[in-house]
Image (cartoon, rainbow, N blue to C red; front, side):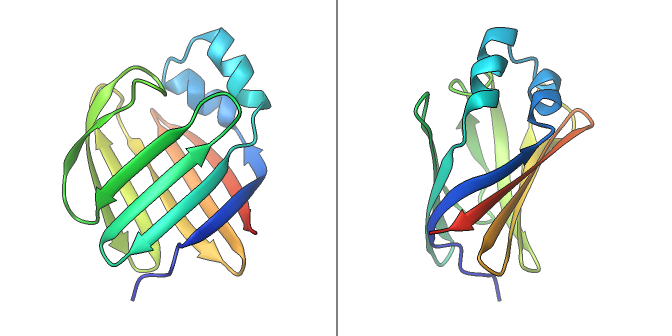
Length: 134
């Protein structure tokens, strides 16, 4: 049975984000701003329907999807690309595969205690983020 992701989560760590953004070819000015941010996650999880809101003082990003259903994701607020995205449960982990220009792109979310973990992957770069439930 998948874990319950519902809640408001505050970032407590962000490791290797610069390398991840470089792998996405994010321009240097945006990388410098993004590295200073500590975005929050507001997640609504109802069965197979999940909404993940990434909230920051610079830019917000909303991802609204159904687990197991491929959709076109517009990442214009992130790296100005579109990709075909599929998100599935692998045990207690929510795994995202993004097919497009960047090879090996995607992410994985999982919960340990009161912490939400996020591993971001792109072109061989891996970023680890941790959020604490409030």
